[in-house]
Length: 253
Image (cartoon, rainbow, N blue to C red):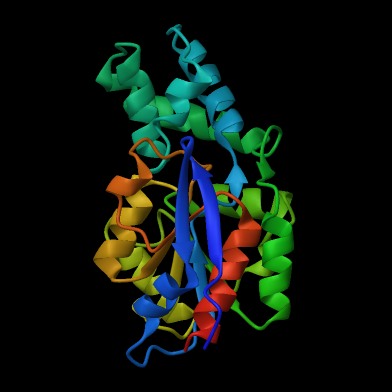
């Protein structure tokens, strides 16, 4: 009989216990070995909020509007840059007529140096390196535009890890519509139902649910809703624990 190890994760000062039995219960029924994994980007693999905040404040200053705190701008992340910009303008009672110009200004500021204050979360590089060495096919599914995503991945040296990148402007719809995630898994040669999606937010949880994908939630990202209220199969705040989950899932099949 297999030993049931316990993974204990501290979340909001409450211990969350996930057993390998939980993993096995979810994976029975002939599911293929999980060799395709798709990740969200901002708030999941990289802490990019400081650069998004800096660009948002410069954009607001261009229109002589008050700036916002890091926490305020971070709370607007997740639905793509156009939505983030609109939320920033609305938060300071700006005129909706400036939305398009504000978006253009934000993009200009952000692309001038998109990784000045951005870095991968601790453990991300080790995880990606290990997964690639073990034969996993990796993808990105983000609401960030293709141009911004490409610059960030290249600038951080992450582009070589991913076989597929589906960005916020790849399709006519963005997450939480399931279409971008379906496309990412399709390009990896897998189905959404067989793959693992890793994200950090309410948008990611909803996307995974709509696509019927297994969902691992990074607790250290930009989520606002309590994790217990989201559809998840695994919650972690250490990427070493995510690797354990992936390996346990494969071993259980």
